[in-house]
Image (cartoon, rainbow, N blue to C red; front, top):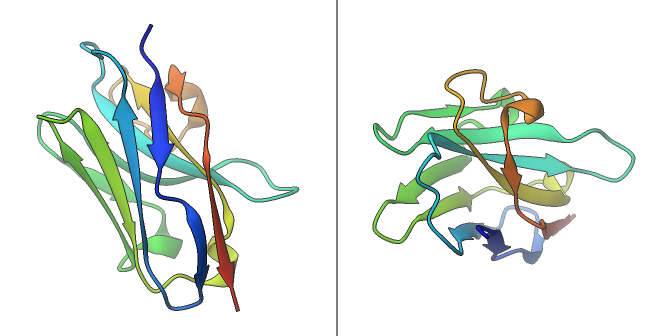
Length: 124
């Protein structure tokens, strides 16, 4: 059974950086793209970034553009989220997810497989 495992979360001061990793424990042959989402307490889960495996095309929510970078390693079957210039409002549980559906990567229902989440806390 394929699982997605996030790592790299933690506590950081505002202006600092963290890198999240999302590794698949098994083969995901049908995965077309990977996404990162986040959910803050009392809020809905929101799209952060996505990347396609084949072309490496990326997409970001406006609030993280210029600060976050999503990338992938095909050899390691791993996706990364480099987060720079972190702000307190970035505090959330971050989830990675896999989809075999093309397009609309900002929609949570497009994804079939989810990781367990990684806590990111940014102090002011």
